[in-house]
Image (cartoon, rainbow, N blue to C red; front, top):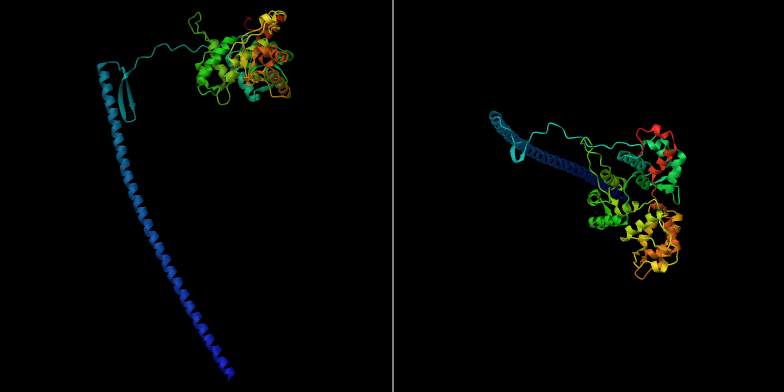
Amino acid sequence: RSKQWYQRRVRAEEIARQKMLERAALEGAAAVLSEDRSFSLKLAVIKLRAITVIKELKERAAQMYVIQQDWIGQRFKKEMDSIKTMSEMLSDVIESEKAILPQVVLSDDTFTVDMGYKMFEPPLEPPPDAPIEIPTPDILTIAQIQELHKNLREVAPSGYISLDLLVEMFEPPAFLPEIWMNVTTQQLEDMFSRHLCETKYINWQIVLLSCLSPIPLPNQSQLIDTANQYEKIDSAGSGRLDMAGYAQGDLWFSGNYSLASDGSAQFDRLGHIKTTLFTLICDENYTVDYIDFLLLFCSDPEPGNGALKALSVVTGQPVEWPHYIESPDPSGSVQSIAGAEAEFPTRKIPITLDQLLRVVSFNRMETDSLKLVKEEMVGVFKELEEKDGTADVGSILVHPRGRKIILHHPSFVLVDYRSILMEAAVQDAKFGDRVSQPLL
């Protein structure tokens, strides 16, 4: 009996389980069918919306096309009206045989007559050509200097070039005056070696300055006046000027406009040099540090005199060499220390440590040797420093170590290439037969 009861119970559970599975299958099929209908409905709604948007875009495009056609028609009508008006005016002028003095302008769809602008017949003879610089055997032309600057900037963009490479650039044949064709490699080395200091590298800006010879060299007063001009132009106090600011200032020389015997204009070399100097000294941003620019022109055949000019530029006051010590100029008189007390300068010229170091380190590479020189100069400055943090320039020049550093400053030596080469050419008896023009 128990077995029969158990079998009936199992059959009942299987029947219930089978019914549940069938019901689940029916519900799943109904759910899938419902989702399918919902998805189809959504696609239909999206399709209807897309059709509506496309219809709107087509309508707007059609409207824009109509507006564009109307605008083109209106502009075309204005252009034709302007052409018609101009044609009528020109027809009247031609019939009356009168000149048209006012300016007649047809611009797009507008025709105007500018009564304030008069038209005249151009001259029959064209204006004369701009004068060009005639090459000479001993002087570099402006074009040659610009080409030399371009080459130097390409091979030595840092501003410093080795002695060997510089000699190689000036060896014949080169785009240089004829007087350079007679020079030897040894002569070039001896000439350029005068610029050397601690290393075998030279700041090629001083080389370009020497190549500009002959050029007027400024004195201390002219350098100070030029510095004061540029300080006024530099309203921002940045210490730099662009081309416009540089052109506003007056240098210590000016152009010399003159006419030749046939009435034509002669080439103004000095006038072109002022513009050329900016391109030779400016940086990649086309600005120039005007104090460094003036320090470069402090160069002098005697380095001591050049250093005095540099001290006057940074201090803004004329600096004289004390009369009771040896003059930096060999042509000057050398007085003994006797009577020094009577001739001791009473005018003090204050200078800061930064200004002094700027003069000492100008145009020199940062080397260990320069570092020692600067440390020695700092020591001299500390010995002579006053309460206001400055030192007297005269006291620095009197100090033995300070005088030695200033007197033998190599960066303010101006080497006159032209005089050196002319002297060598004079010694060459056959050189005069090889040049196209006589040396002046």
